Amino acid sequence: MEQVKQLQKWIDESRHIVFFGGAGVSTESGIPDFRSQDGLYHQTYDYPPEEIISHHFFLAHPEEFYRFYKDKMIAAQAQPNQAHLKLAEMEQKGKLDAVITQNIDGLHQKAGSRNVWELHGTVLRNYCMECGKQYGLEAVTESSGIPRCTCGGMLKPDVVLYEEGLDNHVLEESVRAIAQADLLIVGGTSLVVYPAAGLLQYFRGSKLALMNRDKTPYDSKAGLVLREPIGEVLGQIVI
Image (tube, rainbow, N blue to C red; front, side, top):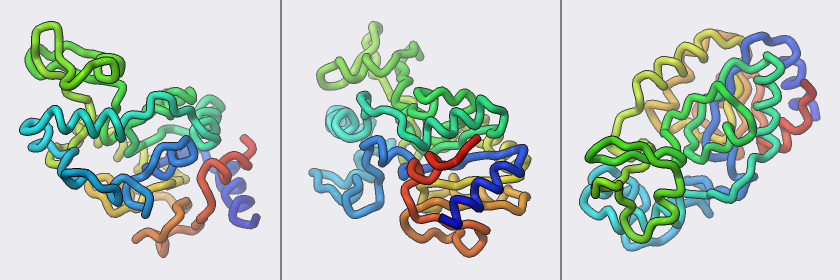
């Protein structure tokens, strides 16, 4: 396929590659995205998913929050797909500077990537809202009802809920990586969620590749647009 050949050429020519990804990167690992017809936002619950994963709902209805969160937001058995594995290989071989992800599943790290900036946090970290003690994923998955600290405080996942701001350090490092990139590969994101989508404005390079099943607001600005599954495309790339 011509577009894959073009992507291969760009990767071969580039020295500072950054990958910016969203939910579509993990769909090939069996994790549903949010906005497609079979995604989380099109499923029916007592409350809309957007409300359940908001800061105010978490505080007001923690039991209901955790019921949804454990059922729909955690995919502990999921394994990295070809996209995660190829990006880890690219980093190990000195081709990829950073992965910037909107995902909270930890699959990039599971695949071996080290320089990962998680814009929306991760399900793998949790902390006590009273004393700040840190906990892993098991503290949530093995609890019944609301997970609690040994001090009695309620645990909160280290994920960015609606109404919460992104971590400033993660944002700054993401901006720095994108600004220094000579090739920016964007995959599996609708590019409609801000402030994350706004990061693309910091790209100064000439090579912008977009991989997404549906159209995005940035398609006209990209030199390369691919509609095929991301793992399928990156799996054909030779590093």
